[in-house]
Image (cartoon, rainbow, N blue to C red; front, side, top):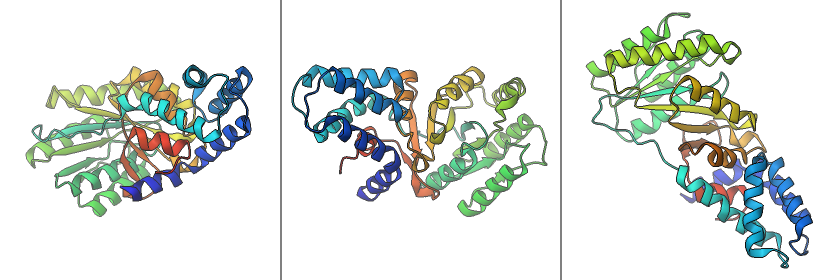
Length: 306
């Protein structure tokens, strides 16, 4: 696990170096007075934690350390503890119920968020656990998304259900469930379109996909995952709101944390929405997507060694 912790720490280094540097600049052996707290709040906001979460964290810090001499290490340690407390309730891996045959996972998110790659990586993880996995290329408008999923299918040895570009996504989902049931698959991962510029069309399409899936299995989809790209920072909030309007989002996966200094946004999302965070991604490889662990994330974000 220590290998993963060092990868996570390296992946979050853009976010943590911004926070660590900011805290060091504020503290510099001074008392934790109102001015210092205000500046610390500012540091947390610039790391995309959002005003509400930043205020909550600094208030917790003030409770135990106000007007005391503090070091930046102490401040980072205390903040990491508070952040872990916020994250702990939402750190829930996606459990596959193998009695469902298949456990249907609908994967949603805007184009470019890393949906298709996330599906491929999840497929690999489940295959390694000995599960029988099927993939459905439900983003039928983008030939590139279908091709990408087919490559992951070959790589992981999972069958991919696909149709011609522009085919009806709901019909494809229906066929995929039929096939997955017939072949005794444990997991069916369904990709979807994410063209947010025309929200009404996308909403209608996703609602239809869910409606048609339910004709085949009224309990499905059993999990609906929203994939978020960490580089969008605070825009992630509106994406969560938008997709929750369209479908019943059951949990989040955050990708591309290694490419941004906005890693704090995850803390803000946990605080605001309380949705399970199933996994996070800090790189291209399948092993760079792992179940989310609150404590590891909090310490990595604050630049604290294992």
